[in-house]
Length: 182
Picture 1 (cartoon, rainbow, N blue to C red):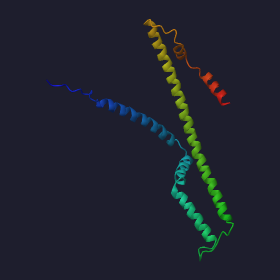
Picture 2: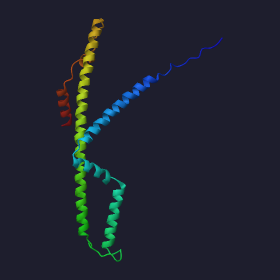
Picture 3: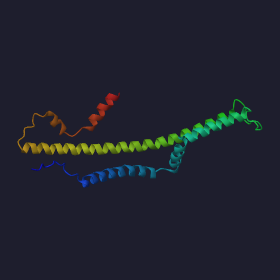
Picture 4: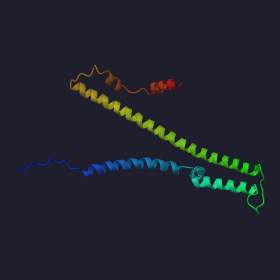
């Protein structure tokens, strides 16, 4: 007498492939949104983004430190044979560092402003999609309720369901959140 071995249901590779394709499609949508936003950048936004990516590196930090060490070394007389051009209290160095800080700050603000615009747009897209999804879910619940009624299932005591099948009042939610934030 032979025993039959219990085998798991064979894995359907097509299921995994379909899931992977859906995930890849979603990633492409997300990437394409970023790519579209990057393509719409003005020339100053492009420059600001490139400079910010350079300014935020360790190499830039070390070059600044090296610049200051050399400047101060020259102007304190530590390097023999090189004439001091900005003696203590290093007025020219102070002005140079101040101007560099101003320029760096402006480029950072430009990039942050652009990022903020993108975030605002994404937030608005999420709100619109969530609103549509909420309307669709409410409609599905209403249809399921009708089906249950036709099947003579008593759902009249389910107060939670009665609330769920009502369209969401966005203004009421907005006012409630505003009260909580005040």
